[in-house]
Structure formats: structure tokens, C-alpha cells
Amino acid sequence: MYENPRFYKDTDEHFVLKTTKEIFKILQLTDLHLGFGIFSKNQDKLAMEAVKKIIKKSKPNLIILTGDSIFPYIIKSGTRNNIKEAKKLVEFMDTFKIPYAFLFGNHDIEMGSKGSKEEISDIIIKGKYSIFNKGLNKLTGVGNYIIKLVNEENKIITALVILDSNMYRNGWFFSGFDCIHKDQTDWCMENLSRLKYENPDLFALAFFHMPLPEFKEAYEKMKLGDRSVEYNFGSIGESNDYFGISKYECEFFNKVLLNKTIKGIFCGHDHLNTLSLTYKGIMMTYGMSIDYLGYSKIGKRYTQRGGTLIEVNPHGSFRAVPIPLTTVVSKFVRGKKNV
Image (cartoon, rainbow, N blue to C red):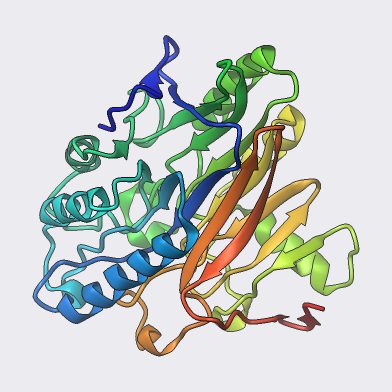
């Protein structure tokens, strides 16, 4: 676990990270898909070099890994040993000497892999610069926690909500993607409401792996000319405008609107989607992915690969910008040019 005089855990089991008066920079990295197996040596090298370049370019104060950091899929990586993968991931991330937060995607604990979420969590926690909490045992998923960014006077500026969007419903791929459950949503909103007492102007940012159904809803409305949906940047690169969303009911977005604290949502999962929209006052952003291993022939793609930099102003605002690995970012959303 990260050890620093400016970082600690409070009585509510929230992490607290003290910031300076300058802009606090958060780098979202998603879908690294590091295999660390006999089949993935070349792809892993490319992925790690990409991460190094993006971190060097963005110079973040905090890194948030939003799922599928490792890929224990034997056909692609040549191993099911996600315990070994997690250890190598921690070793790699610690080289940057920058605190990093971790959350689970749908592939980190691939079906048939060696380690459970509990076992992988125990490895992540041991990282020298790792910020990770398993969260309450009674909650669905593993790794539901909050990082509070506070100023020099210990006043909370921003709450970073880290959630496990889970894997597959009933634990089986053919059941379809799962989602954030009601108990997780209730826990999140209750904690944000309490934090509002500390600072009525508090805003929060939420990070999880799989996109919400409202992301697709907003995109479809925008394509039909709905001017209430604001286009920020990026594009939909998946075939047939694909969104890897759950078919199961998820009330998270509606609760966000009622709670009025979360202003930005950042996910991963769909490697070729880099779109960022603002819908009903909430910025919803696909982080640029790293993947060289998961998708077939993805090594030849370049518009999706990179990171997303979130800059938090100490006065209570934020902005998000893509940090592409190359100089090229697609300027087109299907049917709409970014002008």
C-alpha cells in the first residue's frame, strides 16, 4: 500500500489524499490486457512501452486503472495464471513511483483463471504505490471504495468513487455482462450525501469498467439531433455502434441524477470506443485503451490507444482530455464531425 505523509485512511475507511494548490492530474488507463504468458511477450512489450510514453507525456499525480489490466485468457496470452500476472502488473506500476488505484474489469478474473478476486486483491494491496481497498464484505463485488482529494486545510475538494461493475451475471459468460448492483449504488449515494456535509459544493467522479446503458442512450439521441447531448471528443469505433452494456436493470445513472454529486463517469471495456459525451449534466467518457492483445489485429489500430487525463481544479471543477499515444485522434463520431 502507498505510504506517504499526505495519504491516509480516515475513520469512514475512505482514503484521503492531500493535494497542493495546483491542478491535480489523474490519468485513467484502461484495458491494458497484459498477458505475461508464453504467447504475449511481444504484445506485452508494446503495451508497457505505450503506458510508459503516456505517463511521461501526461505527468499525472494519480493513475486509475479502470479494469482488464491483466488477461488470463490462455488462447491469447498462453496462461491462466492471473496471480503471476497481478504480481507482474504491480511490479510494473511501482516503477513509476506514482500512486495508482485499481478496479476489476470482466477479464482480470477470467473464467478458469487461477486466482479469485480476493487473491488478486491481496496482491494489488501489497504494491508499494498501490491505492486499493476490497471494500465492505456485504457489498456486491470487490473493490468498492472512495478516495477523497483534500486541500492543505483538509477541506474535501473531490471524491473519487471506485466501483466494481462486476463480470457476468450468475458468473457465466453466456449470462451476459453484469452491472453495478443496487447495494453498491445505495452505498455510493449514502457516502456521497454524508461527504456533502463537509463541503456543500463537493463534486465527485466515478470510475468503473463497463459503460452504463445511458451512454448508448445519449449517443443515439445525439445522432438524431438532440442538442441536449453535448459532444466532447472521441468516436465510436466498435462495429455497428456496439456498446458493451448490460441487459440487466441498472439504476445507477438515475440515482446519480437524484444525488447531484457525481459530475463525471469514466469507464473502459469497449477498446475501440473513445467517445465522451455530456448527458443530463453528467460527463460520460470512454477512456482510451492500451490493448494490443485482446482484439484480433488491434495492433494495427492507432486511434483508440492512449489514456485520458482528468484535471481537477482546487476550486472545484474538472476537465478531461484524451492523451493519444500517437498524434492522431479520430475527429469523427458516426454521422457527426467534430468541428
